[in-house]
Every structure is written in structure tokens, then in C-alpha cells.
Amino acid sequence: GAVVSQHPSRVICKSGTSVKIECRSLDFQATTMFWYRQFPKQSLMLMATSNEGSKATYEQGVEKDKFLINHASLTLSTLTVTSAHPEDSSFYICSAGRQGQTQYFGPGTRLLVL
Amino acid sequence: AQTVTQSQPEMSVQEAETVTLSCTYDTSESDYYLFWYKQPPSRQMILVIRQEAYKQQNATENRFSVNFQKAAKSFSLKISDSQLGDAAMYFCAYKGAQKLVFGQGTRLTINP
Picture 1 (cartoon, rainbow over the protein chains, first blue to last red):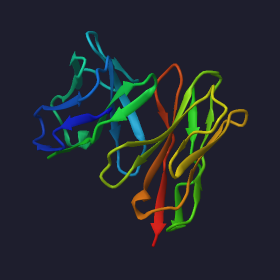
Picture 2 (spheres, helix red, strand yellow):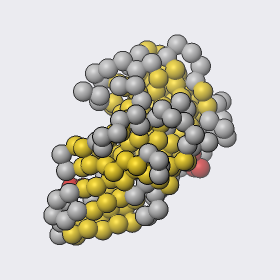
Picture 3 (spheres, each protein chain N blue to C red):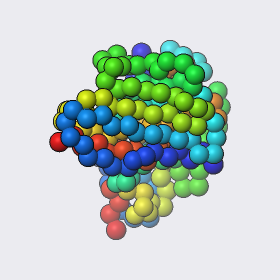
């Protein structure tokens, strides 16, 4: 149990376009999901906490209008990178909480903005 | 704010040998959880082991075990009988009342 999926696994887009990434908890319900960004050879950086039925909580320095988060149901959260630019190219990972404090992670999405 | 420190950027071990990865943390909370996650080249974050702070007994999961020293705020991971598939980045993480906090990671190489 505790499987989290992410789609797409890889996306290439043109500068100025928007990209949506989906995160699903496949075998459990998650009232809270998390979105991280990871640069090469670095640790994970929390971007925002996604709460089902309410607004996401963003970490300091993360633009909420650029990184739109929607937690539509207990099994689905989406991250939309709006008007993407090359500096937004990165590896984005979601996670969902279960068993109290344990987070289970999706396989990640590699975004390349040309 | 809580911090997690992994002082070993890289470690290597001979296949079938034992290796210990270090992790220290700083917190004023009394109730929290500690985790070790593994990130292989696929970049999928995999939970290796978790420890509840209120439990004195060290957690174990097959070849993986921890040495949890609460007073010293230390949480090391021991991998016994290392296998080639253990090669990965290992992240120590802390979870209290706030967000999950990660260490910088340790890259583990297994030498055949």
C-alpha cells in the first residue's frame, strides 16, 4: 500500500506555456499532499502544502500565482506551472501523508522549458 | 526552526560489508518522527525506515537499522550486507509539528 503516482513523468514545453502535473494517491486517501522541487545533486525543497478543500499553503519565496495548486479530491492534487520559463526547469516531486507523519513520494516529473 | 545535518556528502562500501550513514538534528520539540529515505538514480524517493521519538527501541527493517540517540539528537542508519542495489542518495528527514525537513543527503556507492 501507500502508492503515489505522478503524471507526466517528463514534459518539455515552450517558454510562456503552462504545464499541469498530477499527483494521485492510488490506494489511500490523503487530505494533505506536498509539492517539492529538487535541483540536481541537491535535497528536496518544499514548495507548498496542498490541502483538500482549501487553499494551498506556500513556502516563503514561492510565487503562488506562478505555481497554482489545486487539491480537487482526497486522491488528487495538481500543480500548474504558469507561463513557464527556462529557470522553472527542474524535477518536481509530490508526496502524500499517511500513517500520521509518514510521507510517501511520487516518482517525480522532469520539466524542461525551452 | 528544525535542522537536519548529514555530514557525509559521499560514502562508499564494499559489497557485503556494513556501512553507517550519519545524521544529526536540532529541535526543541519532544514529539517527532525521523526517517531515512533512499533516492536511487530513478529519483523515486523510497522510505527505508522510520523512528518515532517516543520509542526507545531502535527501528529495524531487514538489513537496515538505526541507532537513535535522542539525547544526542543523532539518528544514524546502518546498512548490513550491502548490495549493489543499495547504491543511491540517502536522505535523513525530521517531522515534528511543522513540515518535513530533509538533510543534504549522502551519496552511497557500493563497490563490487
